[in-house]
Structures are given as C-alpha cells and as structure tokens.
Amino acid sequence: DIQMTQSPSTLSASVGDRVTITCRASQTISTWLAWYQQKPGKAPRLLIYKASTLQSGVPSRFSGRASGTEFTLTINSLQPEDFATYYCQQYSSYSRTFGQGTKVEIK
Amino acid sequence: EVQLVESGGGLVKPGGSLRLSCAASGFTFSDYSMNWVRQAPGKGLEWVSSISSVGTYTYYADSVKGRFTISRDNAKDSLYLQINSLRAEDTAVYFCARVGRMSTVISHFDYWGQGTLVTVSS
Image 1 (cartoon, rainbow over the protein chains, first blue to last red):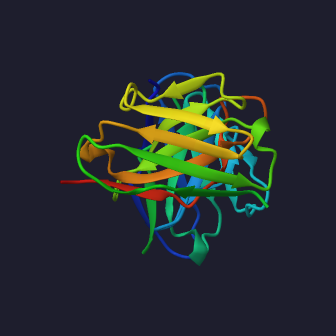
Image 2: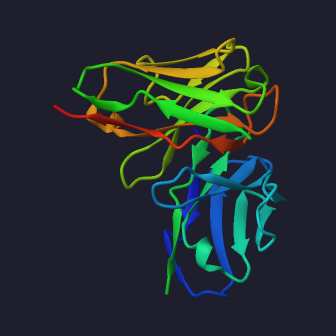
C-alpha cells in the first residue's frame, strides 16, 4: 500500500497566520491527492482534489501544491473557523490511504 | 442537496455481526461508486471498502478483507456494509462517502455522511 506521511502532527497558529501542512507519498501518485478538513464530531469536508483544485464553496485562502511526491496545503490568513484537523488522501490506487492528520490549534 | 445518512451502528460483543446502511438522496445514486471510511476514537481516517456504481466491483482494506462485505441496492438508493467477526479494533465511527467523479471507483470523496458508531465490547 502507498503510505502517506503528513507533517507536522500539530501546528499552533494565530488568526491571520499563513500555515502550511505537508504530505509525502511513499511512491509516485501523480496528482491524485485530496485534502480534507475535519472538526470534532463532524464528517470530513473536501477542500482540495487533484492536488490543487479547490472544491466548490471552499474559500480561496486554501490552496494546494504538488512537487513530485510532496504535497502541501496552505491556508492564507487563518480564520477562527479554520482551527480543525486536516488530512491528506491519495487516490492513485484502489486502496485509498490517508495521512495521519494535522491538528491546527490556536496559539 | 446531496445527503448521506448512515444507520445501524451500536454496541456488539466480540465475534458478533452488524449491518450498516447508508441512505442516499439528492443525486442519481446509480451513477456513483461509494465507499465506507472509519475512524477509531481519537484516531485518523481509514478507508475500509469501495463498490462500483452498479455493484460489479468491490474492494477492501486488508484489515477487513474476509470479514466485511460491501453491497448496494440502487433501486433503494442505499449502500450497506455487513461486518462479521467483529473485534475490539473495529470500534469506530463508520462514514459512507461518495466519489467525486461519476463512473469511476478511484476518486476523491466529495460528500460524506455524519457517521454511525460501532462499539465492540464484551
């Protein structure tokens, strides 16, 4: 199975900060990568797919980038509603795998 | 509006069985592959199983292969997961999720249900 290594596990930031989360795939997955946001007790919400395509309705402060097997999610000007856990997911193979998650906390 | 509503979770003893359901509405269910994803308490997301749009093809994570069976009834706009030989490590919230592109199994997940909790304990 393709392993997805996400970093950091936890990130402390303030409202207005720019934050970046990284996800590294254990093998090439082209740009078959999605990012999800999850708040406690809620279902995950799709933010970005195909590494950099913003899902409809998602604010433009979220962006994604791919470079080989390394993928980044950037949130520009962090808002109070952005404090949550973020997961990457590869869908290059039938066995879809997620990163272990990054919790974005209030500093 | 796309809606996915899971049901069927509960408390079950080790070795027991459950059948989870996911009722879909707001889209043409038979056009989309569907998935189950689970999340153990305080843990991350784990893909469990996928089924193609007409049910021809099914896929499973190694951790559940041989114990879980995914199925669907397109006439009832419903997805199912039969879970047998339950173990403590199967304790999780189980989400159903739709793929983001029609006519393909391999895709991101664009809509998720709210989840149903399965607790395996004696």
